Amino acid sequence: MFRALLTAVFLFVFVAAHAQPSSNETWIRENYTKTEYDIPVRDGIKLHTIVYTPKDASPDKKYPFLMQRTCYSVAPYGADKFPAKLGPSPALMRDKFIFVYQDVRGRYMSQGEWTNMTPHIEQKKKKSDVDESSDTYDTIDWLLKNIPNNNGRVGQWGISYPGFYTTASALSGHPALKASSPQAPIADFFFDDFHHNGVFTQGYYLTFPVFGIKPPKPTTASWFASEMISPEPDGYIFNLKMGSLKNFDKYYSKNWYWQETMDHPNYDEFWQKRDILPHLKGLKHAFMTVGGWFDAEDLYGPLNTYKTIEKNNPSAYNTLVVGPFGHGRWSAEAGHTMHNDIYFGDSIATFYQNNIEAKFFKHFLKEAGDGKTGLPEAYLFDTGKKEWKTYDKWPVANAEKRKLYFQAKGKLSFNAPDESKSETAYVSDPLKPVPYTSNYKQMSGFTPFEYMSEDQRFAAARPDVLVFETDVLDQDITLGGEITALLKISSSGTDADFFVKLIDVYPGNEQNHEYLKDNKTVLAGYQQMVRSEIMRARFRNSFQKPEPLVAGQVTDIKFRLQDVLHTFKKGHKIMVQVQSTAFPLFDRNPQKYVENIYKAADTDFTTATQTVYHQADAASALEVDIIK
Image (spheres, rainbow, N blue to C red):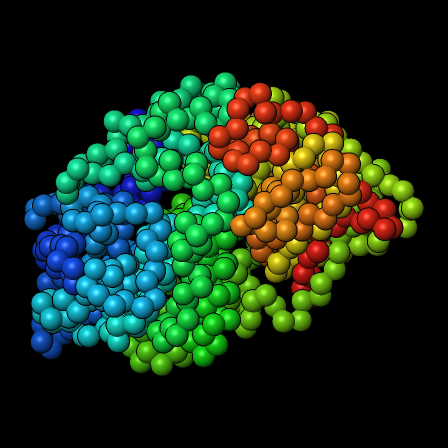
């Protein structure tokens, strides 16, 4: 059961499950030599590293390094055991590189102490000042000196947590490091993965043993497996019966990461120093950041990594790729590319691997390396038109900023409301929270995957979900860029959450496609979620210093949804839904202000009436970028 759960989360298992073990493994054995090393770094710690070198490497035929550093194991261990895949793709594996895999400090076979999102040390003054950048610098130096027949160039990639290690390792500044590709990288745990705008991602409750139990010594085994929770099959009921977050302590009282999370409910120094984005400056090698528009785990990371590098390093080679994928799903070809019920085309992962990723790494590691790759600044997939688009800047420079205003009677329009008084209210009961999905199996899974494009008709039918939609569109409208929720609200309580969803409503005559997973889905009238995000009202003015709402007072709630590139086609409608719970994806707000929600009592939870205003002097809206 444990391995099955990891299959849904961790890239190395996902890839292995989708590869062709017999033929690929045989080919790797025939073409690569495997060696294992314990590489010493400056403070004396040794990092376990596996190197796969092409057998035809020679003084006359030298290869570059392509490296992945991971907390998820570099298995298989042992000289006679080979993986089913090397590198980011079959194309690069067969083109041949010296592939390097390293267990990061304190994980699996590497020595040392591990911490989540290793804080970066800008000024290293002594040998004990170590972080991911110093470990990477020392590793690269060792590889160059000890692995024969290398061409002196190093590239790196990683997806999800290994994506963070790619970003952090890029700060090593080693002159041999020529190309980095952070893919679905975590950037900041207060906005990525474990939190969204500080709201706890309760849907990750099963993952805490992986990140909060330290191994007693280097090991090839998954030492945390015995600490895993076995929830009831119905994850909604399991989490509801659990009650307030502090009740998880009965499982995680010895889990140091859970305790850290509970003790730091606000964006204090603990979280701030784990934010890698402020350190992305002075970068001199090439970057290609990769993400998926339907990545339920890490969409904030790739978008903000790319934008931060672009802002702080204007002369650097820096590109962005985002496809129609869930978390890491560009790493293995699925054939008919689907996310949930939506079909986007065939062999899209292979197109990305061969025409984008392989071009990037081959140019900087084997070819001229002058930046003339032929690739655009941004290679993005329009999830409405279902086709790749290229841009020389992202967000697009000439995009038009418009507001989609909420209106009376559930209308949504680009015209501002003119009513002197107009509002819609709903009652939010944390004891009867809105489910975030109609897929109850997903609720008891290791992490969510499918909800990012799911049909929202199940939510629209609830009285505690507000629905606003446009008239039928008479022309295509492409939203491409940033989205900001601009809400005018009041609450009968002293705290509240607001979960906002941007939705593409299909026409009533939409036909089912041939690749639907079951015969129960009807695409006619489908309400496909395009983007969503949640905001906790206490953080409306500051993530560092929360403050309660004043009950009954009209208040501004402003927050960013992540970017989109989606064409709402003629004949479709644009919809926005607003609700206060999305359970158990996100934890429930007690709706009564408490200092630390992680330590709230079950008795703190209270029903509240939430009012959203859509009148001339208090107009709620989504601000969007429209590409003409």
